[in-house]
Image (cartoon, rainbow, N blue to C red):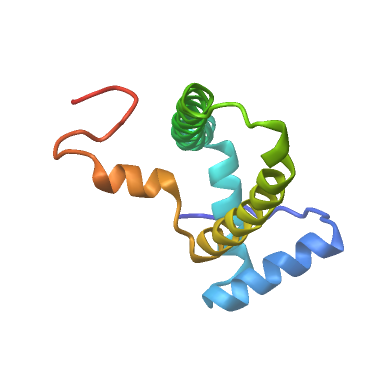
Length: 145
């Protein structure tokens, strides 16, 4: 194929990038520039870019859906615990309030330590729930699938 000569001025940094890419791939700079121009001028270039963006958006959407599901599980678990605790815990008499407060502070410290250890290990309630689900049920918020 006959080639036509063109002369173009590019930024020095861009020239260095072209030079480095040509050296890494062991091809002439002309080939790098031809490929870049062909890609830029290709009619399906915009479609390829759009397809790449759509794939990224799909991945982000799936991640967001997992976050929403996890948040829903967390909120529901907390709500169930609070409801259970409020309905089963009787009010304390005034003479035992100070001792109960001290014991509660101690137990809360243990809770924080346990939570720290679990988070450091990467062990989470969500992961445990998924492992404990009956076979065939993949999303605890939607029932069986």
